[in-house]
Image (cartoon, rainbow, N blue to C red; front, side, top):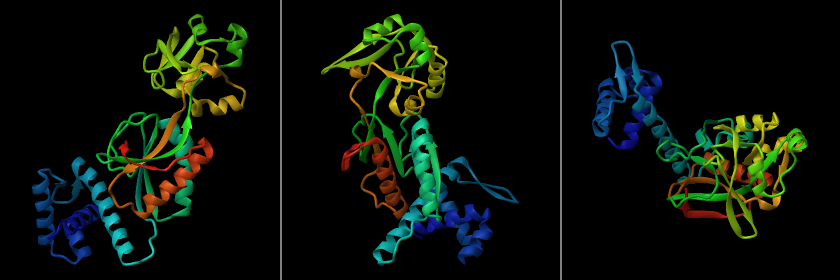
Length: 309
């Protein structure tokens, strides 16, 4: 029995919640289904199901393995359709990761439109402010902000954001506006550890020379939402990524300051595993996300191979 057949049996048992139900659906004997799953567990050295006299339930390992199996089975079905010349329709589960705030503001609207266009696709969104392994987490696509270390993934440049400094009009009216980064030492500051990992030192650039400036944070927070709320409350000057503050700047609630001393822009990349057949849903989503993000963030560029995470 080949592995694809074994994975299909495993997925059927998980879907039906029983070996007998899976056997009926697949036209196999219950004994053959039981042997296939037992052989898979033996090969993996892990228990995939908890069995009782009344029910069969996935273990934690089994649940993670099921996501991978379903993705592989869907990809294989689409690969066969391509080889046979059949027209592909995107279907199955699309797994996407992005930073929390960027995901909520800019990736979720893309996903909403994509789901409206392709009703046979479902999505799993993993919004985290840390880099996760696409392969280990069973993810199809990632959106990454910032410069990327070398890896075996492929990346498409989709735009840029900037690290900027902001203050509320009320704060500036009361304390004045700093004219140089060094002036920040005399101001109250709000540090967000997700943007400035060393809260007491912020990085600026003048010409081609980069330098760090010592600041005095009156408030240190670990989330961007809290940092912006503190800035809106006139508790101090905050350093944030441009997309995090854009709406407040447009509304007049924050002012961007020290513009001529900002560091170079940070890239936005869409990444996916290299050396793998892209299913229809993944390929179409990458195209949609690239177009939408470039329209919003002005990205230009081509596919880069084997040197982006």
